[in-house]
Amino acid sequence: MPTEAQWEKAARGTDERLYAWGNDWADAQHSNSAKSVAKTTPVGHYPSGASPYGALDMTGNVWEWVADWFGPDYYAVGEARNPQGPAHGRSRVLRGGSWHHSSVISLAAYRIHQPPTARNNLAGFRCAVSRI
Image (cartoon, rainbow, N blue to C red):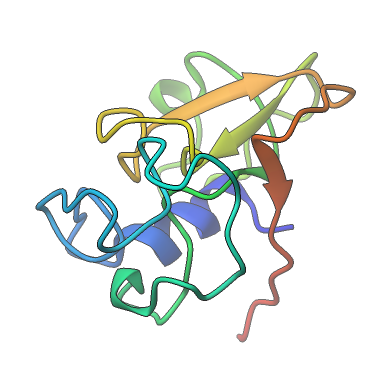
């Protein structure tokens, strides 16, 4: 899984866009969000929602687990460049919103946390590889 910082850069690019496709919400056009379908859709179903790096489904469909533990104030005290998150914790971070969530919760910078044992039809994961 990507780190939270890797996930956010893949979603927002270097111009810090609000959503992977840009700064304007377009309900049901670029992502499976806001109960437009009311269930998950196949990966890649919204090609117009691609991020600047070509990553698909960064907003909506399912929340995506990332590798980082959750720290409420970590970004205020952690590394400024490529932070790795706290070394331990009780819950892990999820990013991207799901098919169930609105434009506000689907913002690329929005994050939630859950214990690693949490299971529901709103969460999934993304496999990623870093090219150095």
